Length: 251
Ligand code: PGA
Image (tube, rainbow, N blue to C red):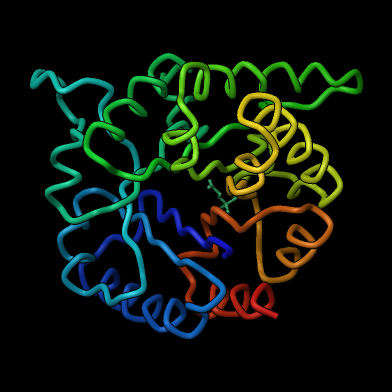
């Protein structure tokens, strides 16, 4: 099963646009449900309206969660609140959240909160820049070690991991990673997981790609890049393009 996860970030702005986007994404999820699990992650304020308009099989997720349940955390939302909203998934470790201060340790605490509430974590990892010598691999290894360090296989298997090279994300990115760059990293990650959990378990763990993925490059990320699906930003806000992307990876 492939994953197609739309990270809407801080968009759209109006209820009516949210409803329109959910309805169109419902259609895409239904059309490709045999091969693709489609999930949308709207801004938290829109979770109830998305929940109201969503149809099976489209899944719903939140962007971020507080690392602790303490009430005095202005601006944050707790795992219980997310659960109450009807969301099933939560994105953590996204580079835009790390840039605002989330450390590896925070991401680990957030992960623990999600397991407590039986929410499925979508954990983002990825290097900020690349260098010729391969030092960027140690940045990713640190992230992996914090996430999986003490996790038993049963919990580890529940994580949807998204490899997102920070330099390839968003409108300011020069380019997406190449499928070869993605492949190098998925191999590195699979080796880490298989050393820790054994090949059989590691093989069942999904590793997605994110960062300027679109309807033109998606197929090569699956075939050559060996990704198991995508975490999509901009394209997830455009149902025509998202539909085209789903169509190419469904083939
Ligand atoms: P992008 O964002 O697809 O717009 O590059 C990806 C992400 O931030 O998850």
